[in-house]
Picture (cartoon, rainbow, N blue to C red):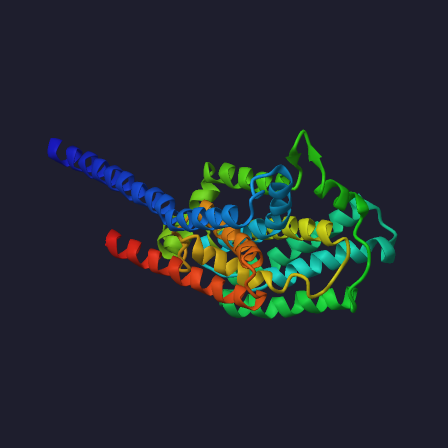
Length: 335
């Protein structure tokens, strides 16, 4: 009888030990995967400082931050989706849609700044829900589903703004370029997004998101509704898409249905540079942020070095290849 009672206790202790061991590599992998992106970012920063003597001045840092804020946010959006094991090819078209809502709503509906921003937020979250339902509940391939919805969002942007124009509420532009005690307010959306992500990592949803990307079947068998996890991941991602579109619209002060299209591939590139596995469940948001900064600062290097802008994409591709090689080497060492 004693042996019979002791066996379950022994098994439960072994199970707890295995769980503790299983948790440790995930955190280590997430932190270490961002290391190549950090190294590449440091190299690019050094090149910028060498080519641009006033790179660390307040004005230069503020200007670079304004350019980087929307890129960071859209890359964070893509990172959330990739970490859950999916992909979103509609984020760029989503930026265009939100931008056109912000630029056209004041004239079409006579709304003020608050109502216009609320309408743009609702449009972004509705797009996220649509993508999440298609991928999570209807089990559609994220590649095909978001490719299709990208065409829908882009079509909606064209309906609202057939030609570039319109006017984004001036308050947004004034706020985005403002500095308080030397602190650029353009950093506020990025810091808010990072704070939200850090908070979610302490919540069970954040852990379930990473676990679903690592092994959706195992998480489902443990009693977690992975469909809901993927839906909420897309909604969270599109909250970041809204933030990115808000920053871009504040900077451009007008609407353009084609404004956000280049950001889709840039977001995927930043995720790859950041060391986040496209298979899901492995990587960190730090890597995505570093990858976004690398993409922004590469443009500065090309410009200040006097290299023709046509070579910018070549540089970007070379950086991605280097980042992939680091990821491959890290994966081989871990095995």
